Length: 378
Ligand SMILES: Cc1cc2nc3c(=O)[nH]c(=O)nc-3n(C[C@H](O)[C@H](O)[C@H](O)COP(=O)(O)OP(=O)(O)OC[C@H]3O[C@@H](n4cnc5c(N)ncnc54)[C@H](O)[C@@H]3O)c2cc1C
Ligand SMILES: NC(=O)c1ccc[n+]([C@@H]2O[C@H](COP(=O)([O-])OP(=O)(O)OC[C@H]3O[C@@H](n4cnc5c(N)ncnc54)[C@H](OP(=O)(O)O)[C@@H]3O)[C@@H](O)[C@H]2O)c1
Image 1 (cartoon, protein in one colour):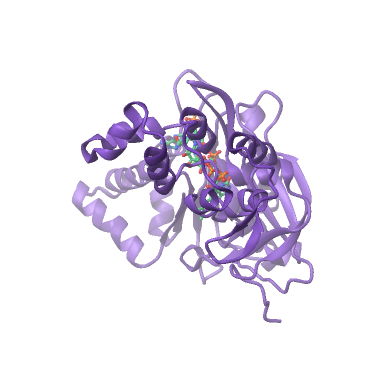
Image 2 (cartoon, rainbow, N blue to C red):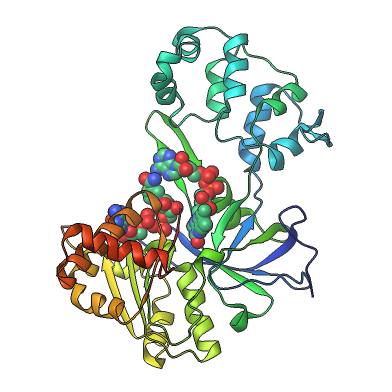
């Protein structure tokens, strides 16, 4: 059946499982979640992501309303022309954690105190403005510039739209039917100059506040599919939540009886508390769904060990897999990990292929061209 649901018409899913994957004493909180897609007609492939429209933390919304002097019931019109209350708009319509440029301009006009206005108005001081904004949310700006007063309707129009977040789907529909599994790292952090705890909007929404009626859609990732040939070897590099799509790959392989060699390289901080899906991965090794499992626990020894260090240590074997036509997949952190993994791949191809750096680079580029090097990084 063709589903009527899409990003424009999200399905309202029910969260049925929400459990910690990280153990007591971990420095992180990563959770396994299961949402029911029952009756939606939605389908997904391994590699796809789930889009989630979050709601803001009602406590933060309450603090904003108090600061603005609103009851919450003031009627407002959204930018799209819909009618709601200011509480409704601040809860589901507006990004209230990051001040928008429009808000800053309006504040600068209404309250011209201090260095803020000068920094904001002088293009040359863009860096100062970025420094000013680092860690400051909308509530901070309102508290620092109390002379800036707004009507409810004016205020909501100054904020950016709250966007959905994507999460790699960590299940195969062949294994779980009308359900979708996610692996979510809860984003929480403190700011040095401010005592208020900061929460990522969507990861804390899913972890703490979601129940039924979660607006979701399927985000197709055609660039991140399993190989067409079920016998092709796959190497999957997935530290942290990067393991999510590979759990889906493994479920799909088991459900389809795929027998090609599969190697997972997983990394996290500590083996004792952060070995996500340890039991499942060890079971997959036992039943042959996974051929090889390599781990890199970065904080179990005085010096950091990351997935790319393991790739280099096992470079001869990894290069042999590549020579046998293996597909190389990377998922997880884009800013640091994916870049370092790419460098390690080039280095090991050079060492074990006996190639100069430019030829090793060409080897990796050729893998990309033939779609044997696939990334899903964020
Ligand atoms: C294709 C794709 C797949 C993804 N898959 C997954 C997945 O499987 N699992 C998963 O957990 N996430 C995944 N993500 C990331 C996810 O979409 C969200 O970006 C993430 O959950 C954070 O969203 P949030 O709303 O909780 O945080 P936001 O409200 O968006 O806040 C995050 C922001 O907070 C700030 N921040 C975070 N930490 C700090 C700090 N220590 N100090 C100062 N500022 C900080 C940064 O500016 C950061 O950008 C994926 C992203 C993409 C694009
Ligand atoms: N922008 C940032 O500064 C920042 C920081 C953390 C997370 N994040 C984001 O938070 C989300 C969730 O992260 P996550 O929980 O999935 O895991 P993660 O933060 O990516 O951590 C998973 C593992 O990767 C290690 N790691 C750190 N730097 C690495 C590198 N350059 N190369 C290889 N491995 C590296 C970590 O080690 P150590 O922790 O011991 O270094 C940890 O063992 C992701 O979206 C990620 O991009 C961003």
